[in-house]
Amino acid sequence: KTDLRGKHLITLQEWTKEEIDTVLDIAYDLKRRKALGEKHRLLEDKTFYMLFFENSTRTRNAFETGMTQLGGHAIFLTPSETQIGHGETAKDTVEVLSRFGDGLGVRYCTYKKGNAYIRELAKHSRIPVLNMQCDMYHPTQALADIMTIQEKFGKNTRGLNFTISWTYAPNYIRPLSMPQSLILLMPRFGMNVTLAHPPEFHLLPEIVEQAKKNAEENGVEFRIVHDMDEACKGAHVIYAKSWGPIAYTGSREEGLDLIEKYNTWVMDGRRMKLGQKDAIYMHCMPADRGVEVTEEVMDGPQSVIYDEAENRLHTIKALLAATMG
Ligand code: CP
Image 1 (cartoon, rainbow, N blue to C red):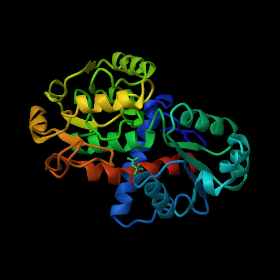
Image 2: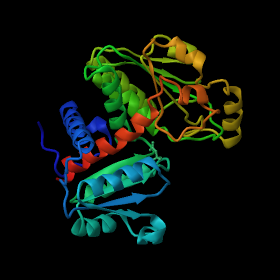
Image 3: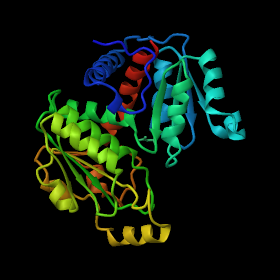
């Protein structure tokens, strides 16, 4: 439908709905081809660089395995094993990698640094730069999430109720990239979005404003509640994720006090029952089992967490093929 070759992906908000649908179409096709054992070496002799400032299980292995299955090669880089650790600039790094290879992915989640660094790379890059998670967005996770919802409810997701909720986590700080990506994307797929969090655990105001705008433009509801039970009522999709109270303001001590105050914000079987009968439970993982979500929910019949994780591979392969093919 659309030509994505050479396109950067920093946030899906900067991609049209048609471009996102195109990647999903490719992902469904690649998933089918893999299941049938059909070769799909769309990126033969291509090289993709993966620059990780933080650890990863799903994202790294989805990109690396994806490149292998597409007939290409992925190279794992970290700041300490490159000259980035010695202060080499984003421009110099990407100028060189652009002359060697065909694509660059970056994970850098440090607040006020990650997104800016990825944008600086993209500015100087002649190969597609893909955001593998930053302080603001996690677009490849959101792609897998929409694919998973479509697989469970059908491609037409209009009218579904999507709840994204904070849950208790012992870490006082967590990146906001997941909830921010989800509240932006789900209204564009026709879903009513409920964002639930304790008052102090807010997201970036400009992202919330944009999410409201997306909802208005797509004729769906967007609401914020500070009660987890209220948020789960009538939900088709319950995505209970933890994020920190003081990612942007306050002190560590205040943050820990707030965590203690809200430690009943746990996703459990009772809360799942407040949703629709066919509701699904999602989590991008890693999850704090038994802390932010009970084992009963994680391993229960409504949980789709492993399908969701598997779809990281198919959507990432689609993204690689579309931007580097
Ligand atoms: N969901 C996700 O991004 O997982 P990883 O941190 O393991 O990549």
